[in-house]
Image: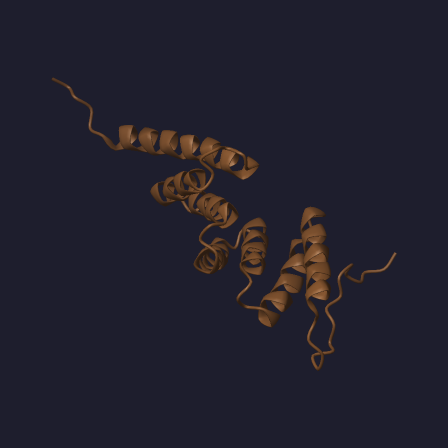
Length: 155
C-alpha cells in the first residue's frame, strides 16, 4: 500500500489543464471527499480554484472541505465566494447555513436555508429538502433560545 494521494497534483505548471482534465480532477477531488480524505480533497480543489477562480463549484467544494475539517470561517468565506459567482446554486446556501449553525449564528443559518428553499419552489432538489429540515430545526432552536432568555412572568 502506498501513502500517495489518489489525486496527485501535477507540478507541470507550464501547461494549463484542459476542460476535460479539470473535470477529471474535480471528480477525483469529489471522490477523495466522499472517502473522508478531506485534506487531500482540499489540496486538489485549492489547485483547481487557483487555475479557474471563476468556477463556483470549486469554491463550493473548498467550502465543503473546510466545513468537514471544522474550519468554519474559511468555509463561510468559500461559500460566500461561490454565492457571488453563482447565486442560483442551492448548495453553497445550504452548506453556509450549516456552517452558520455550527457557529451559533442561527438567524443567518435560517435565512440561508429559507433562501435555498426559495431556489427550488417545486421541491425537486434533495438539498432543498435538507434545507427545509434544517430551517425548521434552526427556527426551533432560535425559539427555544428566545424562550430561555425571556424573563418569567411572576405576577
